Image (cartoon, rainbow, N blue to C red; front, side, top):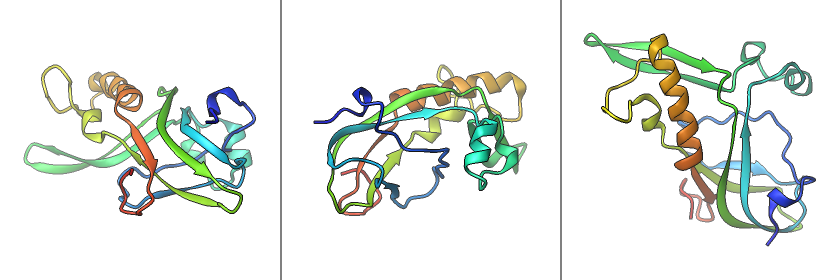
Length: 166
């Protein structure tokens, strides 16, 4: 088995943006990976820096300094209200374990990422919903995101293309 951790020459070039609400498998371009067996993929989440904008002009300037961008709705006072939660404070690494094989002819493999989004906006001790617009809750949300990525994120090859890791 090849371990991507032990070979610094095996890298995907980013930045990459992942839409977590999407139920479709996320294909990963593997044309830069040598054929072989791999035991997982390590992800590095970091704030977008000016160099990222230079190498990928499709990245909106508004993402500069951001590592997480969440758009959603929160139910408050009997009504749903839009919110956008962004932060550049999530700078972490996590690894999704799971064996997959790259052959000479592979260009994309269906690899699915699964995240526990429910835990991002809930206070762990009390179950209280955290308000992304409340500055007092934002640190807790950031901690929850980091914990979720490190402890609850999973993934794997989606050979049957059902949107779930096999």
